[in-house]
Image 1: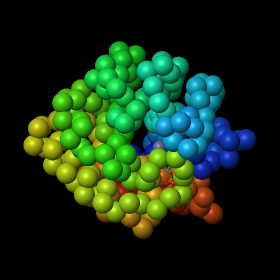
Image 2 (image 1 turned 135 degrees about the horizontal axis):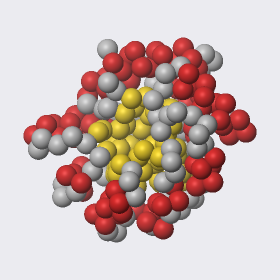
Image 3 (image 1 turned 45 degrees about the horizontal axis):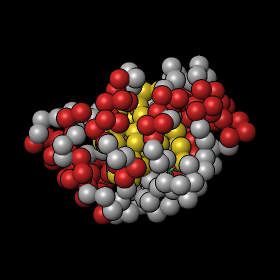
Image 4 (image 1 turned 90 degrees about the horizontal axis):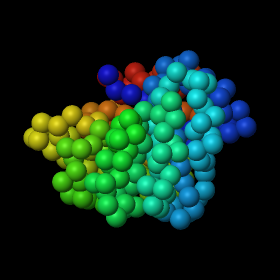
Length: 218
Ligand code: DX5
Ligand code: ZN
């Protein structure tokens, strides 16, 4: 069963708990939580206080996506009782293996995110240690950008590597996912599908969540 992870980047932060409950009631599986520091990416978003504020407000686990430099400094603060995944960018980690071990030692699942231009080969020697690989299908920094088509092939190749090496990490895709492409992306091998503007920007959010879930499992 594939998981839909609405990105709250496109939600209304003045009523975040309500917005999260709305998509949860429609059937969404995870809260995708985008953290940006104005250095790794040209935008600043939310931090640990907001992550902690969601504790107990939803049954959906948090999927924390750290788009920050030197993530080791802040990882423990994002491990709340609600956190299931913490992902760091390979491009932001000097000692990626150590960072992955640190995330796992905190009792949550470890993910590594790759920018569109970063090859899968950077993960060759850490794949065994990963719970999830996050393939960025836009350049990180903003919601509502256009899906970069070459990243679909990246998902297919990663799925093939996973089978060949007999591994069981999950594949997540993030950026530009919507009703027009979610089926093709799911078929390429993605297990967790992030959608921000396609969910929170929809007139009928409830219907949109249900459509996306139906399409990605078809
Ligand atoms: C982009 C973020 C994404 C973003 C996705 O840097 O990591 O999670 O919110 O938004 P959409 O689905 O609108 O492309
Ligand atoms: Zn994200």
